[in-house]
Length: 143
Image (cartoon, rainbow, N blue to C red):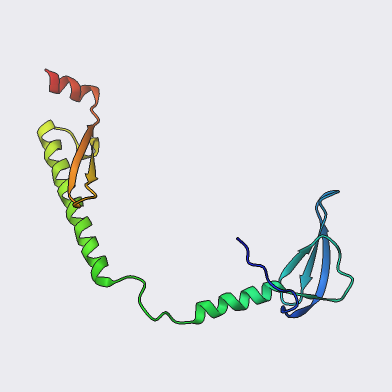
């Protein structure tokens, strides 16, 4: 939801040029201001200056970016722990895929293994495996 800004509190900037855009019934006047911002209005401004609410927003966002954060975004120990757990899971799945591929005599790329994580205890288990076989491999395995 857009934040409403007071035009009375916004700095007044000189209008450098005004453009008319839109078709009949949907006309907008684009007021190009000296600060570089463009203000769209339903009517052409009669004055030479206009309040620029975009300058207020820009200053507000600039202040937010410049203020240093007091605490880190991520805890390095937690990230390292999660990364090592993920790497261990990926390693065990890769080993299972390689073992299944060697037993079936197919390439590793032909096997996809899906795993689940039990949310109650965090244990990971194999749900199913999909093996894509060529016609030659099917005849070799069945004969």
